Length: 304
Image (cartoon, rainbow, N blue to C red; front, side, top):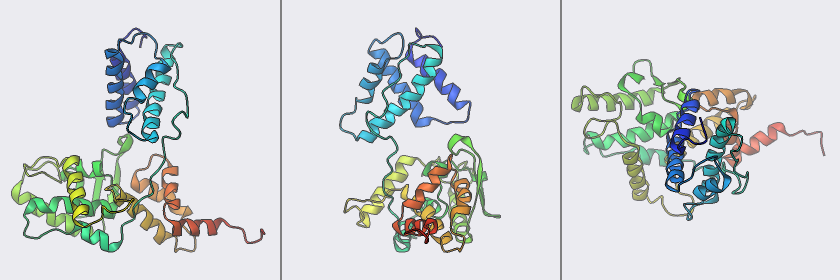
């Protein structure tokens, strides 16, 4: 890579380098290419500069500082890569927008709320059952929505109750066992799907038999929580909170053990497909009651 090359070529080289290590970088790649086009439209040439990066980072003004911090962090990795080939490359200033990883307090669904979310009219037709079935799968497995929508028919073994997730983060393959109630619900959906689309490739399909899009699922989720009256107040439930609810419930059950949860955190990390164990440790502080038990386990009664 040379400093006189167009920014788009530099970004594409960086993405090829990162993806060779298994990183998918779907959204991040789109953002970096957006930055490259911005730089080229601005007539920039030569080494990457901090001033150019900050101008792009600040472009959307009506957003949170965390959003700006994430954009800056994204460019920092790209700039470090460019510096290998061009020592005149500048690195963006650290911490100017604060932390890029501030986590929002999760909305933990109750049993009643989960039952309401996954219910659907039995006479509403095949398509009306698709999104509730997806919601139920996310709630009982902690899968990411993108992972669920990429599932192909052959990835879901309803005989042995095993889901194969081939396109997780960093493209790692993992197996997710299913509870018998989840197998029953998925089998009911699959039988209805096969009546309409016997040659379907994807497990969850649209009205045309194609892969269900994330947009339509999120749209259905927003409509569902609005119909249920859950949009009032400062903390609105999100689709991703189904994953948070699953993780917190597992940890709450394990916390009843005499040994606590610490010896099983790596189990949950692997099950959820976390890249780093600290992502799983975060759940220990997500629920006040769970956090109190963890603190008690680490407390020393001999100290004043």
